[in-house]
Image 1 (cartoon, helix red, strand yellow):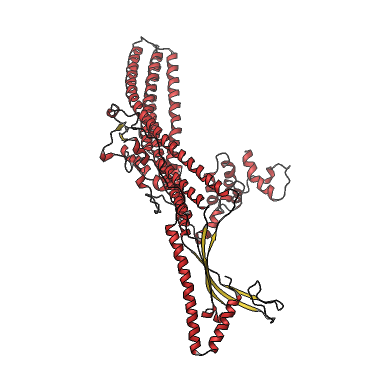
Image 2: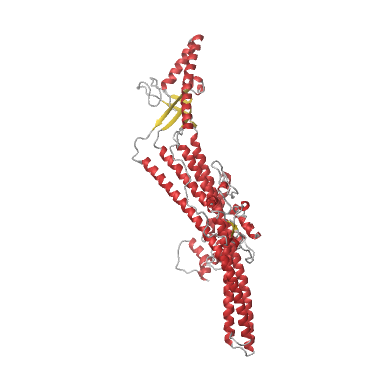
Length: 635
């Protein structure tokens, strides 16, 4: 804070005059000064009143927000009254079940699926990252709101200097020129306040944009949560489908073994030739190989479920059980309700509102900015009387600034915001179209699959009858065994298709629930002033200084697990080798694992340096490391 140097001098002279004058004169001077202070405070009050009135009644130059329109069909194309009688497709929504509510996966009545789904909300890391992004957006809203209020700061200072003896008047440093050659000391305790009223809506639109962005992030959390739940359900039914196929293959292998035993008996008795035995053996071996291959997909689905639960793949095991559920009927509702039930549609709508508010921020730059600054404090050449009343100093005043020429910057900025708004509107409408497409796709899939399952069951029954007839004719010697193989292959193929169709029907049922929003609606969206969402996931606590210091050594451990650094434990005593070698052995790839473990398992005297080839004469330490890595790899 800079105060005119003559002001302190005048105040000091006034203090001296008051001390030398009589009591009456001192009282008059004091009243004059108090009246002067009152006038200044009255002027300051008027300025602040007008500024506050401008803030409250200030105009908003931004465009008003209107929710963008989107084309919605009157009814779903794939829904017909005839389809409502088919179980597992859909049902007419009633007032009691107008939408899917709560934990939608409980519709399948599977306790194992329920236990897996319940862990997604709190442990899924993708959802946790989105929730952290939402919290950051809420912090941005608070940052924007801080612009409504004034800023207060303090800057105590101490200045020591020597004025020029040849200069006259006041100098640029703030000191009064003097013929004395000594140094001068100045103590100051200034308080600075500044405030920029929001006269044209720049701050208000900034806050609105930040609030809309935070609501969009909250909808993104719900969208990712819904996607994670749906993926768990789909992977779970895929895994159950693999279990059903494994059971089918096991039964088929047993049947093929019985056929092979029968052909071997007939061959040993001379009734059948060795060709039938070879055909039965080939059929059995092929079925066993295919049954073994089923374990790959089952393991992958199990690992995918573990990741969606936020758990390591090695710690999650799903017990074996066949696919027994039938698709439950889903209340669909009307198409217009879909706009309120999909979190991704709500997210894009909030992004449109954010872009609309940004246009107001850009337009506010065309108008002047009013800033009110005030400075008050104490200033003295002696610290003993720094806080004395004559050492006071203050100043206050408004400032209006307006950009006269900027080379078209403001106009280009507004054009940018308008184009971004148009982009968000297009994205919103595209999301609505995609949502209707997904609902129609899954409705048609459920309708067609429900018919196909019935037809496929008839095909399985016909194939079983065909196999019974072919087997009977083969036992009577009327037909060759090749006819039996053909019938068995037809039955096996139809049974596989039946399992796949039921699996597809369950997946389409889950995807229909996801396309309908999974029971979510816009009423669950947090308000602009809210700072939390329902069922927030668990986040890592904020680090403290003590935690950082304690975790520093552990952060330096990963480099010790590299192949080059894992050789050091082999040179230590054997009592330390298991604890230092065991963790790298679990995480290292299979190809490098033997090379890293063999030096630690063998005693140090084994494989002396004599076996190393002589054509490597580097310094002393490299040859000492080579015998530990090269001889095991040669072996």
